[in-house]
Length: 110
Length: 110
Image (cartoon, rainbow over all chains, first blue to last red; front, side, top):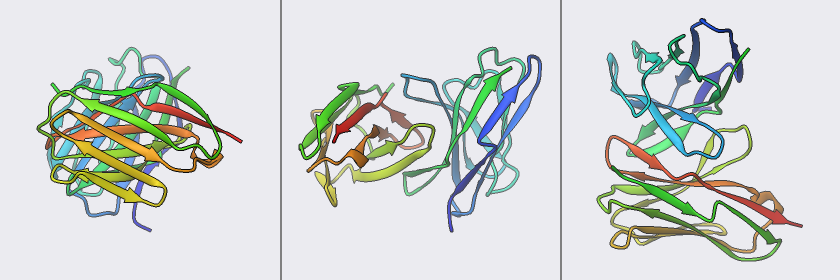
């Protein structure tokens, strides 16, 4: 089945630790996105990538990093510089300006 | 910057009622508007996409309309069912980016 796979579903981070959220798609989409969702707020864009080996910062990129070495993969690293990382993280891809989402990763701080 | 607003934030209706969810956006220069459904702890599922040149789209009991000039879109749900209970989000696409509302949390009471 074609789709977007995010892993893990739940992730816990210790203070000072970097953690990486995985996002893989087999839809052959060029564009991929990372969003952060906090309770009662809309989705906020962290990073996006239109093509392999290229990505741009979104509205809240500080404390996060990404890579796009393969078309299928767009991992997000939450660094220790992100002081409030607890949130629901959503990965998406787009084709013809239609967005498709993964099932999300809930990140919490221990 | 595009601002997207959804009112009301929450809505409860008895089963069988028809209902309308509202989405407004500040910049009418959009490529399309997409409606999503989100269940608790899950990713977003696309419901309907309306291109900027279209006035409405229908899928089963759902009908979405778009009025670019007034910066408004509505999602009409006919004969609501308990299974329709979820959060509904709209997103305005301006090219590289998608701008999301904060959603309407719908509860359909049996």
